[in-house]
Image 1 (cartoon, rainbow, N blue to C red):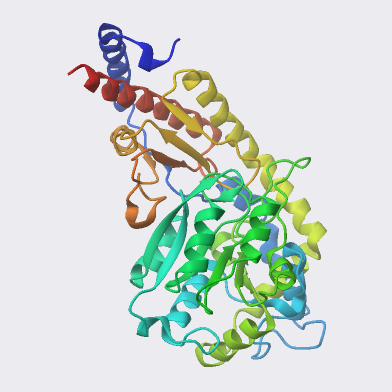
Image 2 (image 1 turned 180 degrees about the vertical axis):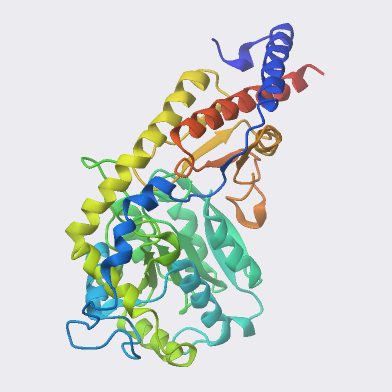
Length: 429
């Protein structure tokens, strides 16, 4: 079929009647499907149920240095867990702190600490007239929620396949001392699945911030989340690049095993320079006596090393890869050539980014909801939930079964077609 925009009014009206009939029939099916969040499926959780038995009552609960993990001690994490995360990110264990189960809470604490205590002796952000953050868009809604809660002004930075628009990033960071940070998901970005190019990473490392306390918030959430064994988004290691460029303190890198082991029972980490690590640990001594070292030990015993982690991730990939491919096949078959939508084809991560015709995203999401399929809210991938073009929709393929995914995708493309036709018909009024 030719592109919808090439159809005349009568053709569009006839198409609308057919699509609307299909939509009413779809609503009668009583679907109740949720594609709103990037959660691992029950099959993925069941795959690793033996993880729970790694540390039991009669097991060895001491670290390689003889520390009893049942007791206090090792505030910044057991050595084995620090080494496991450092190997995952290709950094030195000395630059790693291991936390609890959530990297999001570590990011929240990092912003809160900067607001209240300041960064390496600089004025606490809460005492400044204005604090700004750069936000590559579309991006991760929970990042934006953190900075919004603290009253930080957020500035949209357009994304490309190579990463954020670095000309804009350099202009804001190098010229405006109120710009204190930038959110980044550098590998398999949420939601587009892009990996920052080497040039982009090097330009980040070479920034010359007007603010001494500017920090790159490098959320490397999908560091080992490849969908294919023979192809991967290769990401240059940011900490060493910053050191080479004379900016060793400019980055906080965050990670977790939330979608490696159990999302609710993983381990999280931060990677930073010696100076940043020292400040974080100083605050931690007041905040906590320590995190769950038994869970850290459980991870080490389960994986043994980075090769074990990578082999485990291929098991995840075997479960979720067919879901990504199924969605991409339906989108290509049903929407290809119609010029009413474009979508990414990631080789890793947890999401597909879909761009509808301008002004259509909210209506598409609402129609899907009315027919029983819940998607991430339109606008969620932008600061303040305001997508200036009302076009971006995040698709999360991982949680539903393949049968549920097929039904949800069929309904999604139906809603895209219906809303697009209604939009085009407005041109004839």
